[in-house]
Length: 110
Image 1 (cartoon, rainbow, N blue to C red):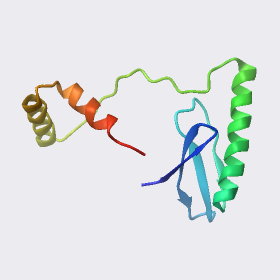
Image 2: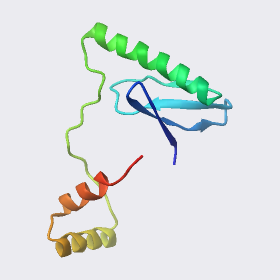
Image 3: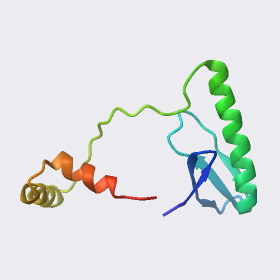
Image 4: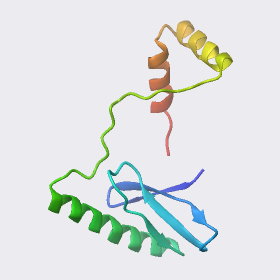
């Protein structure tokens, strides 16, 4: 799992890129790219803040919101046995399969 850091109220995933020997930050949930690179935690904070600031400024200039729109729907493809098990769990709990997935995902913290 990648590390997650919060910068300016926005979360970013931080994997290490071995090809360049640096950490690469990528903000989550934005409607465009605001990536940043650094070789230290302090550098990530500094570069992330600068990248996010430029991105938010560009959004303001263009009159667009910075957040990516989510429809509230997504398709999950599962092996038949996993689907059957999930349906059984939902039935046993007296909830829909949709509700079971909502409840499970709402408990995931990152």
